[in-house]
Length: 315
Image (cartoon, rainbow, N blue to C red; front, top):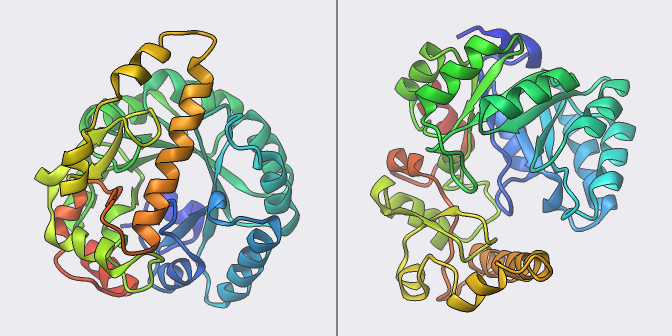
């Protein structure tokens, strides 16, 4: 399974444990690195810059046996901490940064000065070509099977398009839950895969046992798209609570979103309310179970250590 990504990240297997809001943590990434894959954490999982710096230092100290770790940055204006988070990452150093939801130009320029690789989330060929021109080290092809905010194109269509048109490596994100899925993505032209949802039900994940068990009990058919979290369609498990509140924006939200003046503020309020609901469901017992996940939980049959999940993926 040696590919350009295993060479780029100095890992045994061409797999990145995807950054997951509220879920990913230092312990998971340590275990991932020891198992031969790379791991990534959203910078927004840390409330303060001091906590982010501490996480970087702990992961650097854990790299005595090799491996690669990175952080995910939301690079648009909605992330007020972005510039300071980027500064800390460049000061302390990490192996790679994954950019999402905005132009990665500043991140690429600053990270490369610090010797950090930059991989960019893209959902189509147009943006993939843009990030390649900006100097990205790889494109992460977020397809229609991804968890959370996903793309519109199938894994095969998107990966084929990007691998044929780009000179940088393509990492397929979405729809991977077992070894056969990895082989399939590589056959489409991917040099690696980004895997998130199967790791939610890991013993090391920073979420409740109820959330983890839901990933065991539910499957691909139970994943639905909702606009009720961030205003942008997002995949969640179709729990009784999600069924109760519905997956579409309210009539009032729809009307307000038609206003150029109010649209931005409505989306910010919806995002804030949705993220709080998601955090509450992930971190404590609540009947308001809004659990973000992708269809690859179909392969999740038990709550297992990260290393056992990696073994299932690559063996």
